[in-house]
Amino acid sequence: MKFLGSDKLKKLVRFAVDTDEQTSGDRLTLTVLDVLQIAGEGRIARDTGEEDLARRIRRPARKAAGDQAGHWDLVQGPYWVTYNESVRIPDDCALILQPHHAVMVNGLWHPTLVVRDWSEMTGILLMVGARGVRLVEGAPLSTGHMVAAT
Image 1 (cartoon, one colour):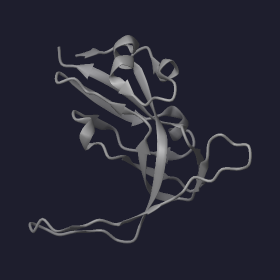
Image 2 (tube, helix red, strand yellow; image 1 turned 180 degrees about the vertical axis):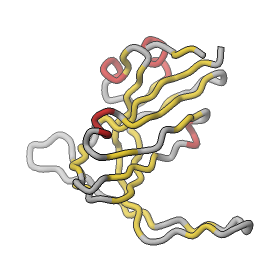
Image 3 (cartoon, one colour; image 1 turned 90 degrees about the vertical axis):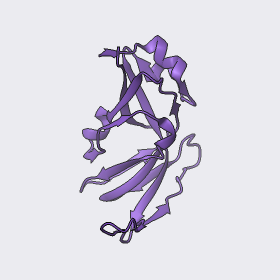
Image 4 (tube, one colour; image 1 turned 120 degrees about the vertical axis):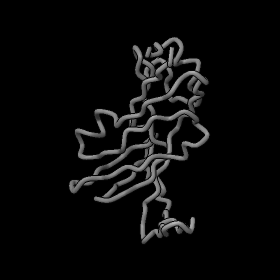
């Protein structure tokens, strides 16, 4: 198992806010594009394939006068967050995504994922703790490591 370095990562990332800053060593930082609040009940039935997704309510980013980036004031609960970036994952690689340090120290959490096909990444489940958080557009959300099988 081998981690890809920043030179190779830069070639695989699109739509990054700052490619040089977001690729350091063997680490890639992915940032917040949009936030949807998960509300209501979902339904998953046994053996029937029936699924009713919980409602997702778009939360528009608020911008104060003179602010370049908007923000969301999030209360405790689950949110669906999308990334600014997209990542091309080579056939012999996998992308391991973990919560960014800034996310964890502020009482937020998302699962660690192993991604083989970016087209299946529609976003990530973000859990906000009791303190809540002000999440700014373009803020770091996840740290990724690209792992090559060889």
